Image 1 (cartoon, rainbow, N blue to C red):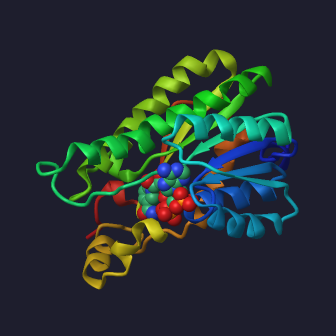
Image 2: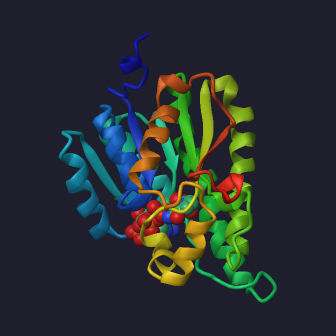
Image 3: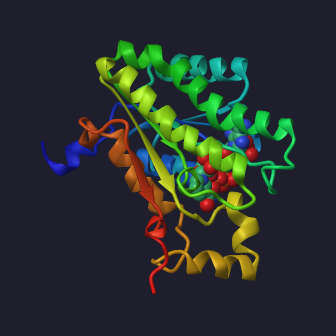
Length: 259
Ligand SMILES: NC(=O)c1ccc[n+]([C@@H]2O[C@H](COP(=O)([O-])OP(=O)(O)OC[C@H]3O[C@@H](n4cnc5c(N)ncnc54)[C@H](OP(=O)(O)O)[C@@H]3O)[C@@H](O)[C@H]2O)c1
């Protein structure tokens, strides 16, 4: 097998949650360039339309489905609309996540826990579960869960979010173990700080941004396009013997700052 066939996604159908912008859109672009048909799902149709227009430039077929990934009915609808349009699902990227609360763990409301858990953990399981039958019927598939470096290092003021991302790392292992017999590989990507809307409050604040940069040996935050290539590896046959892994893409931040 050549390098280009290993990374080829021609004939594959990929569902990407949170695909309208940021990391999800960058992953969608990469998969579209590699030949996949793309389904992007997020809550707001306006953002999906904008994202789809950009992704379609590569010549890929793109379906948009307005979906709240914490909602059972919406998730079922995402899977059934994908099946109606493309007839199959081969790749699922669980990427849509939320963090409605910045502050200490001791002082948080139960509603913060519920919201974060509903989308960041149960939402990932629900989307994978809704797409599972098609992957089994196809004789295999790929599930990619977007975790975070904060699943390994607690983010100050982001405790519940950090706990949810640690859960995503374990969810990935459990899914990988259960689905290995179905030839479905399940892996996670754990980005460090990436310049997107999600992290805007951090990189637009000069003091915070400076403090973050000092923790990263690479000396800068990532661009969303620096995540797409890793996702392509995990979505393609190049990763057929890789499962249950979490790949940290963090500019060396897990290593600690360099002196
Ligand atoms: N940026 C970082 O520094 C960073 C670092 C580590 C990990 N991550 C992780 O990377 C992933 C993507 O983050 P990002 O930085 O690309 O964020 P982003 O630019 O804010 O994009 C988030 C995407 O998720 C969608 N979304 C949010 N809540 C949703 C829900 N309940 N249901 C469906 N879609 C929803 C958004 O669209 P709508 O608003 O239309 O729903 C949007 O498409 C997340 O899992 C995040 O935890 C980010």
